[in-house]
Image 1 (cartoon, rainbow, N blue to C red):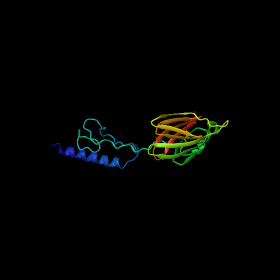
Image 2: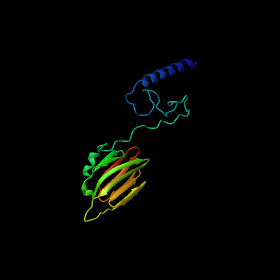
Image 3: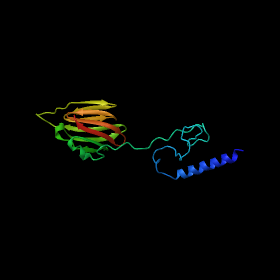
Image 4: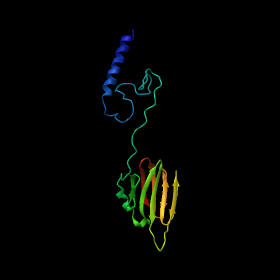
Length: 183
């Protein structure tokens, strides 16, 4: 004798779900299932989750988030680096302006391959020679120098200091997010 009441409840629930499916207001982008007002919340006794057919049935895991990483503070505006402080997203072949007080010139992100970024720069010659000092740390970081030219190869989440310049790679994909600051 419960069949008419169950059928009516199922029909009402289906109608409520159809109405909610056309609405994009508060759940757009949340990745969570739509829950119409007045219906049981996910995880409460007797509730069903999206993709399940009965209470207590296993549900598939939620889809992975597709949100992009936040943009760096200066976006792609490499000119913001001219004062010696910036956080930018760069592609290979990008010349990066830096002030002379860093003791360096001609800073360039020469290439991005896999999860490595290669930076080159030249030491400013003073008193008849080149003076260069630096450190490197992180997931991968390697420096080399030859007659005033410096090459630094960095992995993600790595930090290098060369003379008075600090380079910090945050993420590396087809572009590199790098933070540049005085050292």
